[in-house]
Image: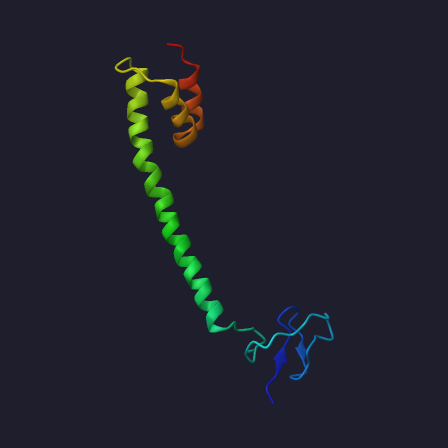
Amino acid sequence: MEKRFCSHCGSEVNPEAVICVKCGCALNNNKVSSNGVSRCSDELKTLVNVFFILRMISSIWAICIPLIWVIPMYKKSMAYLNGEIEMDQGYKICVLLFASLVPGIVLLTIND
């Protein structure tokens, strides 16, 4: 007969038990290895894999996309600070919200 372990506290339980006598938690019907580590179903493994992959993809975009707008905002802000171009309040607010807090505040405090 195969040994069965509680997935919450790790204690050995009767293979036919519905709850753990040590911690009182309900026992699930997942497969259990001989060392007491619970293995989840294939559906849960697939779900975890999908969300990890989505997170990795979103992390790549979270790094690359801000660079697409931060670099031009930096260049335009430097041109404004050097007196080469004019900048309206809306753009200064966009720098504050989307690029960087401190440069946005500095730009907003400059009176034209």
